[in-house]
Image 1 (cartoon, helix red, strand yellow):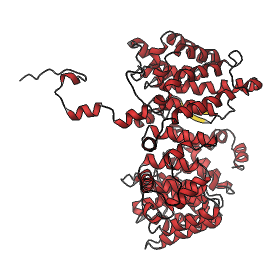
Image 2 (cartoon, one colour):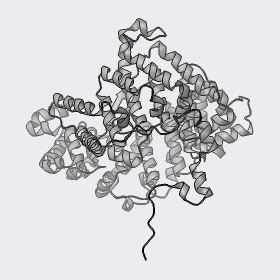
Image 3 (cartoon, one colour):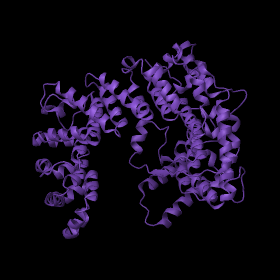
Amino acid sequence: MPREQKKRGRRLKDKPYDKKSVEKEEKTEFQEEADGYDEESSSAGQQAFYGLLDGTQIEYFKEVDEIINANSFKSPAEEEQLYEALWSEIKDIELKVVTDPTGSKAFEQVLLKASQLRLLEIYKDISGKVTELCMQRFSSHCLETLLNCSRSYVSSEGEQNYVIAQIASVDTVNSPVTSAVMDFIAEIKPDIRRIFFHPFGSHVARTLLMMLTGKPLVAKSGSSVLSSKKASKKKAGSAETYHYDSFEPPAVFQQCIKDMVNDLTAHLGLEESRRLALDTVCSPALQLLIEIEDSMMHDHILKIIFPSREAEMDFLTVSYIESLLSAPVGSHFLEKVLYNCPLSFVEYVYEAFFKPRLSIISEAKGFSFVVRALMERLKDKASSQFATELLNGVTNLTLQNIVLLNNVILAVSAHESSTEKVGKKIQKLCDESDINNKLLVLLDLKSFDEISPSRRSHLNDSLKQRCILIENIISHIPVLSEKIVEYFVEFPPDTKIQFCENALLSHAAEAILSKPDSALPIRRKILNDLMGHFRDLACNAGASRIVDACKITTKGLAHYKEQIAQELAANREIVQRNPYGRNVWKNWNMDLYTRSSYDWKGRAKAW
């Protein structure tokens, strides 16, 4: 029997009424409050649309993106020629390009190579449409890149015109990019609250604030903070990291920051601000505002969220902090607050909330992350006392306690007496186990048989945190770190190889081999067990880092260094065909070894 032909797409009006489906389409009351959305008062709430690119244009942008990512230009002139051709294709259809998923990537590439004149031309082209573009999924990425690329020109304009930079006004002739940024700000100012708490617009607003304050920033080309995890993994190999250094912002930016902060916090109330702190989109924006307020010696938002500073916290505030600790977003928010708030507030939260409830809240998921911020901000005596109380509550090596121990070690790493306490506590917990090799105990492994290169299980997160604990012990607890190395030496040779080839365990092995003060006999034993396996180790994703770590292990053991180099050189073709092997070959400077082993030995002595 022939089936009924169904219509494609979403046609809600043609469907019978379904209360659940309608509820999903509607915004929640909180979301409306967060972004201040009002369709009647502004058309910017809708997705910006300026037309579609045709198939030929999309194919062209895809090809250009592939060529740029391959980076196979024969000369700078050839590269410049490609970018000029790309810009000529984009010119006059900029708004179509920035709102297209493929075109926006090409537009970002143009921005990264743009001259000052081209940036000014782009600012002029988007004038009048900035608010709409901020809240469009793809164009928002382009605006982030535009602002980041403007930083160097704003900084240089301030340095060249030092006197002008100290005046709270803009010289459009001598500071054209600074003037363009000010026009950008003036255009979005009426809608700044809605943009700041919008899923796409918030990233543009935060990037703008980072530039206005002159804070350093790290960004990746071909990748956005809004990309999915799957997309980010695909782009990870080709993405280039750009580091934007801190700079002294011009005086005119200071008033902009004050106005923006005032506009964003003017109508914030207790209930709304507390809900914003627990929202995945709004919480990072609120964290940045608190950080900026702290640099301005203000704590207006903190006073809204925590209005009372009485010795005994009220029930609602206690419940709210508990809800922050139980949620990943909330724990990150509280951690950021503790790093960027007056010391008096840190001491108040510690005395009024954490200290009397330590045994109860220590089981909260986000507690271990907040601990580090709390201990680093408290004074030495209070921090040491807090560490002692925390360690008394650790009775086993569960995942929660492992994460807690990691943060405690990092927080007290500057205090030798406190690190000794942590070391004694870990040793005591390990001694409670019947397993003789305590390295297995720390990794929650019952025997050497459980170690394999392909160990993949639901315990991956636990194993990752336990490997981080090994790294922290090696770096910060000298007495215990020596024992860890000795326990590793006890592993059978085959088990050592499997341990090194495991993607997670290899990090722990790298920390052990990178310990510079290990005794020579111990290092010799480890190297003897690894000899004959360096070809396979170099070509393994996890174990390749072990070969690099052997540069430290072989310090003072020149003949071992030469044996490793000989083994790599003997398997040159296999090693160089492998991506991990190529990195090892480069790190060991093997091209020099194949040309002149004598010169290589001279350089290797400095490792």
